[in-house]
Image 1 (tube, rainbow, N blue to C red):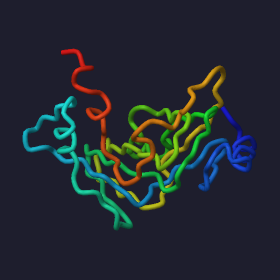
Image 2 (image 1 turned 30 degrees about the horizontal axis):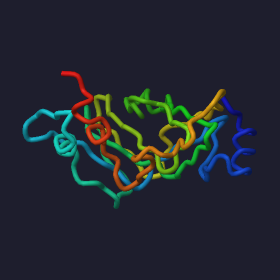
Image 3 (image 1 turned 180 degrees about the vertical axis):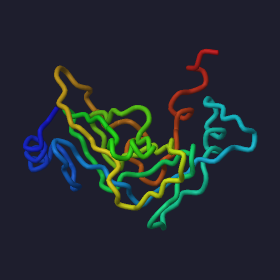
Image 4 (image 1 turned 90 degrees about the vertical axis):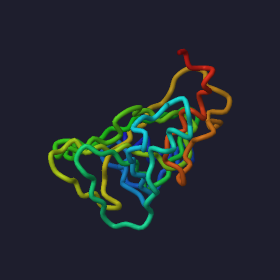
Length: 185
């Protein structure tokens, strides 16, 4: 894991792109402008091998907001305010802030790893596990990203993933990436 001193040095050298805040030895991730609520589909079922079924899970994106009330038991996708660029030898790991977890907000509930070559806005998965409605505010700190260096050989083009960092679309692209024929039934 890299220290704040190493992160600052790599940012100055251009190997790491980050204009947001550091907190301790991690990057402080704050809630940005784009939110994507999840809604119950008409059928009540989402077929994860069918992209149109997955797309039906999402409500209209929200871009104009100062605060948002997240109902109990619901999930919301939120873009991180500052974009991130990781060089080929760097990766990150997202962790929620424990203060928010103690109030019932689960931040980035799965897949905490950010792979080498990431370039764009991260998307956080926010779930309200509290017995109360939780009010979120634009720009509030939600998580931190720890940065690590990789050892050994690396892929030639780590940024070739087709869905990396697209701020305009926070939705899952699972069925677009993993064709139905690849799924065992």
